[in-house]
Image (cartoon, rainbow, N blue to C red):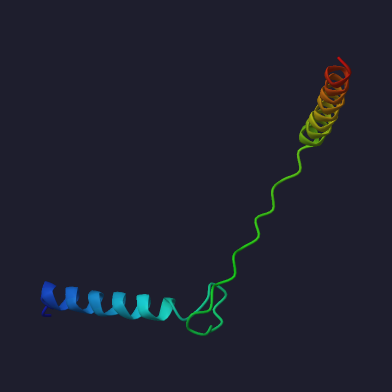
Length: 81
């Protein structure tokens, strides 16, 4: 049994690589063909819901509103002074 030369394998691998790269640009991740120049759809990444995150976000919003009310009161007092 005769083994093929390493250069033959290299040429075959290079050819397969070029074919795969050229066809990858015309087929989307779902395997459906798309037109040239058409942008691929971006995947939607859903983040896990964390129970403590919602409470912390509500607290932060409450604190921002409190700061806004305090700054508004300071503005009124400075205007009256």
